[in-house]
Length: 85
Image (cartoon, rainbow, N blue to C red; front, side, top):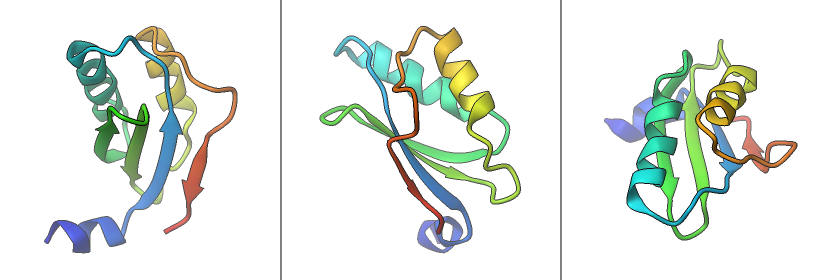
């Protein structure tokens, strides 16, 4: 069921920088999940990447970048990887 849901969503992957602690990675996840349009999120602690599954109608990453920056999460100047699935 989860795979079928993800097939309908737009996938984005963003690199980020935070201290290597569980609380910081949890902050990344929780911040992302609060943004309108983010349906699902996953944080990879080994690569420091945030994978997002977005509502196809709300693919603008501006609000997400603003929320992560406000939470003091460092981001590269542009998205790292995108997939228009």
